Amino acid sequence: MKDKVVLITGANSGIGKETALGLAKMGAGLVLVCRDKGKGEAAREEIAKATGNSSTELLVADLLLQREVRRVAAEFKANHPKLDVLINNAGASFINYAETEDGIERTMAINYFTPFLLTNLLLDTLKGSAPARVVNVTSSEHKDGRLDLNNISRDSRMGRVGAEAYRRSKLALVLFTYELARRLQGTGVTANCLHPGAVRTKIWSHAGVFTPLFRVLSVFMSSAEKGAEASIYLASSPEVEGMSEKYFEKKTSKPSSEISYDEALAKKLWDISLKVTGHVAAPAAVLE
Ligand SMILES: NC(=O)c1ccc[n+]([C@@H]2O[C@H](COP(=O)([O-])OP(=O)(O)OC[C@H]3O[C@@H](n4cnc5c(N)ncnc54)[C@H](OP(=O)(O)O)[C@@H]3O)[C@@H](O)[C@H]2O)c1
Image 1 (spheres, rainbow, N blue to C red):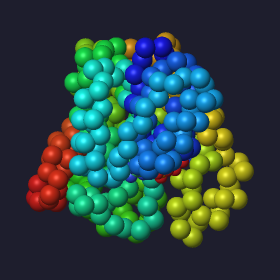
Image 2 (image 1 turned 45 degrees about the vertical axis):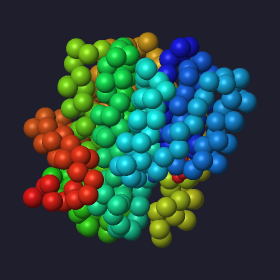
Image 3 (image 1 turned 60 degrees about the horizontal axis):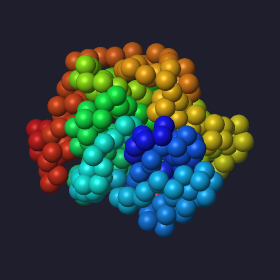
Image 4 (image 1 turned 90 degrees about the horizontal axis):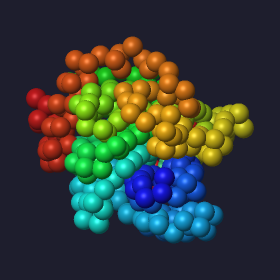
């Protein structure tokens, strides 16, 4: 991975940090996008110390907000003429319903609309760096996801059961990955997504009344280091060079849910997502 530039979101903890560590060991130049400057700086220092790779840079952004996604993409582009790998890793699961300033339910915002917007903003740089890769961290939970395209950004039912919003957002991410891969055919840029396994990270500590249960179950989960293996594999392995439009569970290509292969649905989702991310003030209005 020497001379490769990798941008990874949510790189200060859990799977993202271990992915960054693994790629830094391989010599990649890393751009860590983190929400909190202090946590991001600590991760950057830890990675540099552990790997001896000092070409790790931090960009700070709250990825729940579209203006921050736009700002961080512009900051990246101002300093980097190339991008070999984009890893959309940052994610969250919110138990209560609330909307971002863009009027989007938060789980859908961070897990789906942010990867959609960030990837589209960086697409020209990725194409100019081909062969290049987009790696989206989704979840096997997408298999139980249901999408209502008429109400994708604001459906308050999503928030009543946090897990429902999470499943929906991860299904949207799989549909996006496949549609992106189809649109990128012939450009040398590939797009794949993955489920990292059940991994012991802080994402499980936001599960409301279920948090203590997950704490107990966490002894059966993989370490974050193990959870990062698939992201590192898809970002770096020659075995997947040129491979696109695939869903991986750990390091094995597997079928995703039946609905995730619905190309008409993926196209509609793409068009709606363009509108939702293109109209910061009133995304609901553009859906009417
Ligand atoms: N753990 C699992 O079992 C599992 C299973 C399937 C899929 N996944 C997926 O794996 C990915 C990584 O999650 P994880 O398990 O490693 O959890 P984690 O330790 O909570 O890491 C999530 C990362 O995303 C960042 N993030 C969240 N909201 C953000 C925001 N608004 N702006 C910028 N960064 C933000 C977090 O930053 P802060 O530290 O500032 O919050 C953190 O760095 C997620 O996409 C998750 O859905 C995890």
